Image (tube, rainbow, N blue to C red; front, top):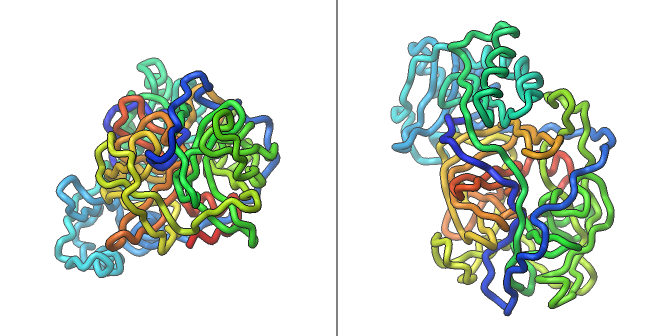
Length: 422
């Protein structure tokens, strides 16, 4: 949950960069589907988290813990209210250092003004009311800033949020209220691929989106895409999917079968809004549609103009945490901007979706290229060569094209159920 640069994030329905076939963009199609209807309650499965990615677990293991992140130079950094607790921090982060073949001596210790337990308590206390303020964008307990961090659209919202924080008794020094750009939906289109692999463009009636990753759910083969890439976000309407376009190549490849409803009673959901922990839905492949499990299309470079498939990434594992280490690098492959990568700048952030009554809980923001049409893109971490760990599904991108937001894989399975991805 590193401090963010000012950005505008837009929900971006999207796909793998594909330069196959003769499909071209169709600018006449709308950029986003309708808002969801009222949703039934949904019991969520709490994801398991690795210690280094779980600040609450670190706070239990290291007295005075105030946040852990990787800085701009790649240095692992921890906040401690008592720097003399360094040995406890090194021990708690031992697995993190061993996995990366780095010495614990590389750990940099910063003096923390606030303990993580206080930041978590203030975040839980402030988020529902702060995010109910018109113009509120997100609320975050910031690992890299050792502060509560609230993003808002304008000065008026900032003033109202500060008033909320003051009324709740949260110290002014413990909270940064920053003007940022809001999250909103966009959508677009690109080419065709067989067998179908992760990220390939899809078209559902009136809208354009893409596949996040192929998966098997309860023995049924299908794919996961963004929930807003269905006829109605949240709730099953048996949305049909075509690839690449219903109008030019009307080949139906799948039908939506799982898309949990949004609810008002989810823990941390702001007043007057409807919430989920993932923007994700599952669609069942039509019999005869060839597809490859565990395969993500790979372009030859990270240039946004390079949309030609040069090979593939292979999914060998899935992230088990709903949060990620701030400062580490993740990747995405999308039909508009291709392969891009960047650092995690905020994790487990509660995000209002601009122009809707929706809030996405515990999402992750990355500084990396994105554009309209990249929604549904797979987000992953390269582990070795072309092997990757699947981290989640991208659903939003900044209007300046420099940041994206994604739903963690653990949140997706918590709502859709167990998924076999490789």
